[in-house]
View 1 (spheres, one colour):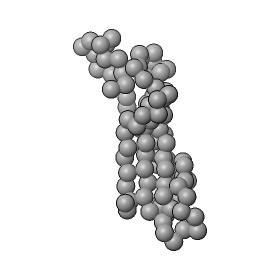
View 2: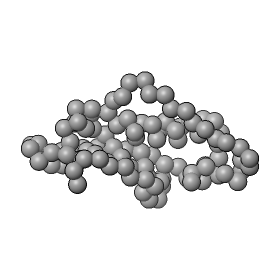
View 3: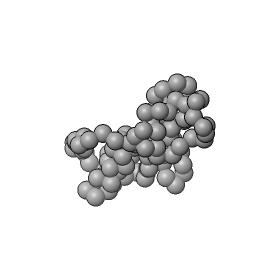
Amino acid sequence: TVIAKSLFPRAIIMIAIHEGAPGSCFLSTVFNACFLALLDAGITMLRSFVSLTLAVPSESSSSREPIINPTEKEEEEAESVFVFVIEMPTKRELLCHAWGKF
């Protein structure tokens, strides 16, 4: 957990996310927005984190180099897409969500 729950006994901390229009790196944007919302609300956190999206281009692509924070088109054309949530500054992986071919 990221939130220092012991400081909020018998409390519920809820973050509501309303999707306006989906776009590239949507899930990473949601995780980063949640972190900033907690920070802005003054919620004590045990660790900081950052999220990023990584797309692996398809085999027919001219370059097989992974793309960090791809555009919506690059995400759609990618063979697989990974969303990482990384603890800072340790760079330990907190979460990985992936879809596509592996």
